[in-house]
Image (cartoon, rainbow, N blue to C red):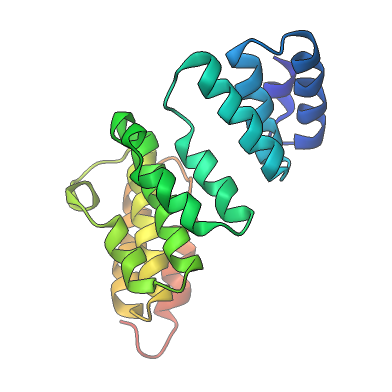
Length: 188
Protein backbone atom coordinates (compact mmCIF):
# COMPACT_ATOMS: atom_id res chain seq x y z
CA UNK A 1 0.00 0.00 0.00
CA UNK A 2 2.76 2.41 0.93
CA UNK A 3 4.61 1.72 -2.32
CA UNK A 4 1.53 2.63 -4.36
CA UNK A 5 1.09 5.79 -2.31
CA UNK A 6 4.61 7.12 -3.00
CA UNK A 7 5.30 5.55 -6.41
CA UNK A 8 4.98 8.68 -8.55
CA UNK A 9 6.64 11.15 -6.18
CA UNK A 10 9.44 8.89 -4.88
CA UNK A 11 9.95 5.73 -6.95
CA UNK A 12 13.11 4.80 -5.03
CA UNK A 13 11.18 4.77 -1.74
CA UNK A 14 8.41 2.74 -3.38
CA UNK A 15 11.04 0.29 -4.60
CA UNK A 16 12.46 -0.03 -1.09
CA UNK A 17 8.98 -0.81 0.25
CA UNK A 18 8.33 -3.44 -2.41
CA UNK A 19 11.73 -5.03 -1.87
CA UNK A 20 10.85 -5.40 1.80
CA UNK A 21 7.43 -6.84 0.92
CA UNK A 22 9.13 -9.26 -1.49
CA UNK A 23 11.43 -10.44 1.31
CA UNK A 24 8.33 -11.35 3.34
CA UNK A 25 6.05 -12.69 0.59
CA UNK A 26 8.13 -13.68 -2.43
CA UNK A 27 5.61 -16.24 -3.70
CA UNK A 28 2.71 -13.78 -3.96
CA UNK A 29 2.14 -12.63 -7.53
CA UNK A 30 0.74 -9.22 -6.50
CA UNK A 31 3.84 -8.49 -4.40
CA UNK A 32 6.16 -9.40 -7.27
CA UNK A 33 4.09 -7.31 -9.70
CA UNK A 34 4.26 -4.32 -7.34
CA UNK A 35 8.02 -4.82 -7.02
CA UNK A 36 8.33 -4.94 -10.81
CA UNK A 37 6.34 -1.77 -11.32
CA UNK A 38 8.28 0.06 -8.62
CA UNK A 39 11.54 -1.05 -10.23
CA UNK A 40 10.23 0.14 -13.60
CA UNK A 41 9.36 3.60 -12.25
CA UNK A 42 12.75 3.74 -10.52
CA UNK A 43 14.54 2.95 -13.79
CA UNK A 44 15.78 -0.45 -12.63
CA UNK A 45 14.98 -2.19 -15.93
CA UNK A 46 16.56 -5.59 -15.29
CA UNK A 47 14.96 -5.89 -11.88
CA UNK A 48 11.61 -4.83 -13.30
CA UNK A 49 11.83 -7.51 -16.00
CA UNK A 50 12.70 -10.22 -13.49
CA UNK A 51 9.95 -9.25 -11.06
CA UNK A 52 7.24 -8.90 -13.70
CA UNK A 53 8.17 -12.20 -15.32
CA UNK A 54 8.00 -13.88 -11.92
CA UNK A 55 4.62 -12.28 -11.23
CA UNK A 56 3.33 -13.60 -14.55
CA UNK A 57 4.55 -17.12 -13.75
CA UNK A 58 2.99 -17.02 -10.30
CA UNK A 59 -0.30 -15.47 -11.33
CA UNK A 60 -0.75 -16.51 -14.95
CA UNK A 61 -1.86 -13.02 -15.96
CA UNK A 62 -0.86 -11.86 -19.48
CA UNK A 63 -0.89 -8.22 -18.41
CA UNK A 64 2.02 -5.81 -18.13
CA UNK A 65 3.40 -6.85 -21.53
CA UNK A 66 3.85 -3.20 -22.47
CA UNK A 67 5.99 -2.63 -19.38
CA UNK A 68 8.03 -5.75 -20.13
CA UNK A 69 8.56 -4.61 -23.72
CA UNK A 70 9.47 -1.10 -22.59
CA UNK A 71 12.09 -2.55 -20.21
CA UNK A 72 13.59 -4.45 -23.12
CA UNK A 73 13.77 -1.19 -25.07
CA UNK A 74 15.41 0.58 -22.14
CA UNK A 75 18.01 -2.19 -22.01
CA UNK A 76 18.78 -1.60 -25.69
CA UNK A 77 16.94 -4.67 -26.99
CA UNK A 78 14.18 -3.36 -29.28
CA UNK A 79 13.99 -6.69 -31.13
CA UNK A 80 12.93 -8.39 -27.90
CA UNK A 81 10.30 -5.71 -27.37
CA UNK A 82 8.89 -6.52 -30.80
CA UNK A 83 8.87 -10.23 -29.97
CA UNK A 84 6.77 -9.48 -26.89
CA UNK A 85 4.38 -7.39 -29.00
CA UNK A 86 3.94 -10.32 -31.42
CA UNK A 87 3.50 -12.94 -28.69
CA UNK A 88 0.24 -14.91 -28.36
CA UNK A 89 -0.32 -13.28 -24.96
CA UNK A 90 -0.65 -9.89 -26.70
CA UNK A 91 -3.95 -11.06 -28.21
CA UNK A 92 -5.38 -11.52 -24.70
CA UNK A 93 -4.91 -7.91 -23.57
CA UNK A 94 -7.73 -5.48 -23.00
CA UNK A 95 -7.89 -2.43 -25.25
CA UNK A 96 -5.97 -0.13 -22.88
CA UNK A 97 -3.05 -2.53 -22.47
CA UNK A 98 -3.08 -3.49 -26.16
CA UNK A 99 -2.76 0.17 -27.15
CA UNK A 100 0.13 0.68 -24.72
CA UNK A 101 1.87 -2.34 -26.23
CA UNK A 102 1.39 -0.92 -29.73
CA UNK A 103 2.91 2.36 -28.58
CA UNK A 104 5.94 0.55 -27.14
CA UNK A 105 6.29 -1.53 -30.32
CA UNK A 106 6.26 1.66 -32.39
CA UNK A 107 8.99 3.02 -30.12
CA UNK A 108 11.01 -0.14 -30.73
CA UNK A 109 10.63 0.42 -34.46
CA UNK A 110 11.93 3.97 -33.98
CA UNK A 111 14.86 2.62 -31.97
CA UNK A 112 15.70 0.51 -35.00
CA UNK A 113 15.45 3.54 -37.32
CA UNK A 114 12.24 2.21 -38.91
CA UNK A 115 10.22 5.44 -38.76
CA UNK A 116 7.62 4.53 -41.37
CA UNK A 117 7.09 1.13 -39.73
CA UNK A 118 6.56 2.91 -36.41
CA UNK A 119 3.79 4.97 -37.99
CA UNK A 120 2.17 1.89 -39.51
CA UNK A 121 2.36 0.02 -36.17
CA UNK A 122 -0.01 2.57 -34.65
CA UNK A 123 -2.56 2.64 -37.43
CA UNK A 124 -5.91 0.93 -37.00
CA UNK A 125 -9.61 1.62 -36.72
CA UNK A 126 -9.30 2.74 -33.09
CA UNK A 127 -7.10 5.66 -34.19
CA UNK A 128 -9.93 7.33 -36.12
CA UNK A 129 -12.87 6.30 -33.94
CA UNK A 130 -14.27 9.17 -31.86
CA UNK A 131 -13.84 8.97 -28.11
CA UNK A 132 -12.23 10.57 -25.11
CA UNK A 133 -10.63 7.59 -23.40
CA UNK A 134 -7.11 8.25 -22.06
CA UNK A 135 -5.71 5.42 -24.18
CA UNK A 136 -7.12 7.06 -27.32
CA UNK A 137 -5.38 10.35 -26.52
CA UNK A 138 -2.09 8.48 -25.91
CA UNK A 139 -2.46 6.53 -29.16
CA UNK A 140 -3.10 9.67 -31.19
CA UNK A 141 -0.24 11.44 -29.46
CA UNK A 142 2.16 8.59 -30.19
CA UNK A 143 0.95 8.51 -33.79
CA UNK A 144 1.58 12.24 -34.15
CA UNK A 145 5.00 11.95 -32.54
CA UNK A 146 5.98 9.14 -34.89
CA UNK A 147 4.67 11.06 -37.90
CA UNK A 148 6.91 13.93 -36.83
CA UNK A 149 9.89 11.60 -36.49
CA UNK A 150 9.14 10.32 -40.01
CA UNK A 151 9.34 13.90 -41.32
CA UNK A 152 5.61 14.36 -41.85
CA UNK A 153 5.10 17.65 -39.98
CA UNK A 154 1.72 18.57 -41.49
CA UNK A 155 0.21 15.18 -40.64
CA UNK A 156 1.79 15.30 -37.19
CA UNK A 157 0.21 18.70 -36.56
CA UNK A 158 -3.26 17.36 -37.42
CA UNK A 159 -2.83 14.34 -35.16
CA UNK A 160 -1.50 16.39 -32.24
CA UNK A 161 -4.71 18.43 -32.58
CA UNK A 162 -6.76 15.21 -32.61
CA UNK A 163 -4.89 13.98 -29.54
CA UNK A 164 -5.49 17.27 -27.73
CA UNK A 165 -9.19 17.12 -28.56
CA UNK A 166 -9.56 13.64 -27.08
CA UNK A 167 -7.30 14.35 -24.09
CA UNK A 168 -9.91 15.49 -21.60
CA UNK A 169 -7.86 14.18 -18.65
CA UNK A 170 -4.68 16.01 -19.66
CA UNK A 171 -2.47 12.92 -19.98
CA UNK A 172 -0.44 14.41 -22.85
CA UNK A 173 1.04 17.73 -23.89
CA UNK A 174 -0.55 17.41 -27.34
CA UNK A 175 -1.95 20.94 -27.38
CA UNK A 176 1.47 22.42 -26.65
CA UNK A 177 3.11 20.25 -29.31
CA UNK A 178 0.48 21.38 -31.85
CA UNK A 179 1.17 25.02 -31.01
CA UNK A 180 4.93 24.46 -31.41
CA UNK A 181 4.38 22.85 -34.79
CA UNK A 182 2.00 25.60 -35.91
CA UNK A 183 4.84 28.07 -35.47
CA UNK A 184 6.90 26.18 -38.09
CA UNK A 185 6.85 27.90 -41.50
CA UNK A 186 5.79 24.79 -43.44
CA UNK A 187 2.85 23.81 -41.17
CA UNK A 188 -0.61 25.30 -41.41
